Image (cartoon, rainbow, N blue to C red; front, side, top):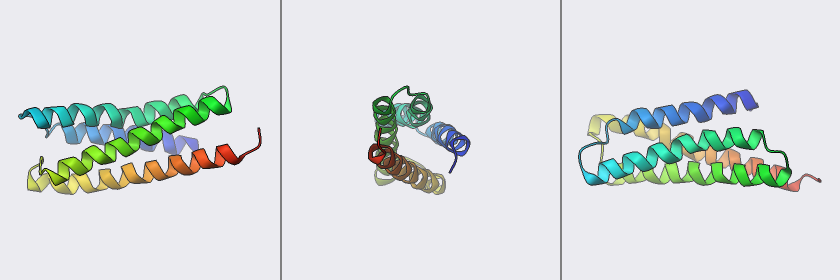
Length: 121
């Protein structure tokens, strides 16, 4: 997958999580989860963009590691939404593709980090 496609995917992931979060309001828990999901889901793409501009291998690894953490955290919040039934049953179908994407992004970034770390300097 090329850089342009990853930029698109990570941005779209953030947008889709923002859209889903519109249905998380009312209770303290829903508001908290909403804020956390928006923060980490949008951070995935922001840190991927930063990694692309890294000036050193170490800087790239650090930024891509943050993208890994944020994508995985997004998956955790999405799982919590499902487990705690924070969405109306009709909205659950919107959650599953986001969880799949969070897990795929995590795996892609982990593979990317492994590749860069094994390359000679």
